[in-house]
Image 1 (cartoon, rainbow, N blue to C red):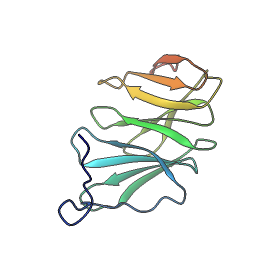
Image 2: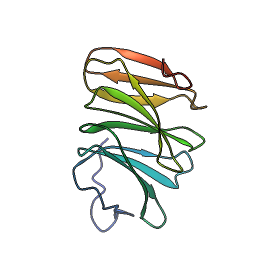
Image 3: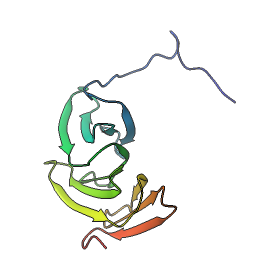
Image 4: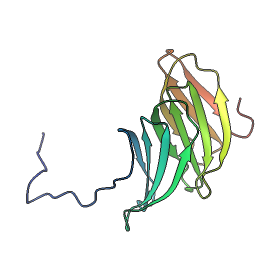
Length: 137
């Protein structure tokens, strides 16, 4: 069943504006209070849902960010992109914690384990990789 939710009966409840290029990835925190978004200009933004304001911008990918995820505790952001890397960021400060290299093509999927200690990634290189976030291997 497909329903069209546009129109007066189903309005959009929030619009977050601030990226300077197309938005290519989004993830809502487990609590639903923050949104992480990735963009074609390589930036990642962390938004407060209630205020609609961007609280943090992370820059480090060379090219588009195609995937983002957030650890269940909301402390770590993971990203993957055109530069063939998976990155781990501190969600409070925006500091890059780790860059994981090994894919030979763009990374289009990242998913963190609930405890944030492992992350898996999927790439156009036709591989899925599982990473130990403490070591980057």
